[in-house]
Length: 206
Image (cartoon, rainbow, N blue to C red; front, side, top):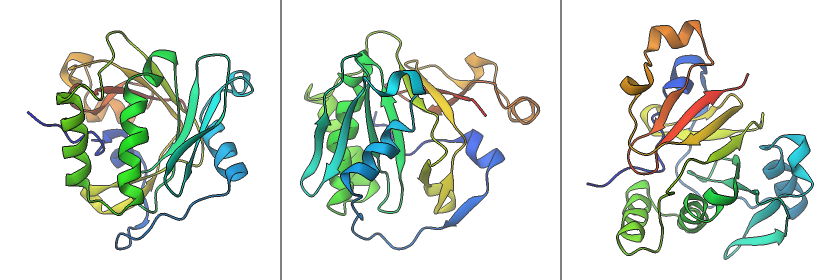
């Protein structure tokens, strides 16, 4: 079975946040300056972790590690569409697993690849052991207020609320006790953001 790793279900976004704008036809990604992308990447992680976190910046040929940290955390601005900006920081374990798939697959976005090609690339990478799934829980901070992701269902760029993503392989919303009505009443409830081996449990922080 294959999984659309880059297409978040985003129940929480569709329930609570209107689209910013309809997405334009795919175009080349506009690269940010190194200082701008560094600041945006680090906005995803709590302040007390920022100074010692590593940073990856997207350049013409792909991501470049522009700052070596010392606390095991690594930050990037991921893309799932030429117009999206998704600041995310990964803990030591996820930096060695899931983040590698994001770093490599985002380069395809840079080159104009479609969603289907990206999903095929990641699934092939898992099959060949180029990428691996974590063998224990992990955390990704995405608490930036400048988090703009493409959602295929509405073909639009959506502004996401600050949130934390925890890795939990093959869990379902039913196992978490999630339902839409309860979520509308309590935005802090965890919800599955993606299905499959790269499962993310998403918890809003704001």
